[in-house]
Image (cartoon, rainbow, N blue to C red):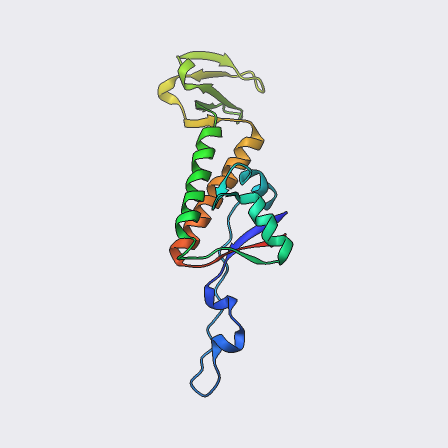
Length: 181
């Protein structure tokens, strides 16, 4: 397993070279690393079908880790277009795997009900948990979601978080590092 994070480029330099010596040298406070908000356990599944510079992103991360940990996965400006394409692929795959659009209702006891948008029509049904009548009126829906199994939804959330992380790291100009977790 591995994890991604990003730090300012100056933090990767030798500390004595970046801080300087002498009376005018000032220590720069360390910045918090930028970390994707997803569960690291699902990163490998999220990267399974994604390419980075002609290679599978997952395999590239594992190859880099076989040499050293942590390793620079991407750095701007040279890797900016490739990493943005990878972020776009993550979004596209997440949309493809998201499942069918569904409208959602909730009983007073909290039991959720989701009906595919194509099948929605006004109907009443008894709640499976409490037996109360739930009105599935399209005008009173709580909103729309995508109906997918729990694992797919979690992997898609990891894809979206990783895509956002890659974009933010490149926008800041910070190198993206990969490390063993």
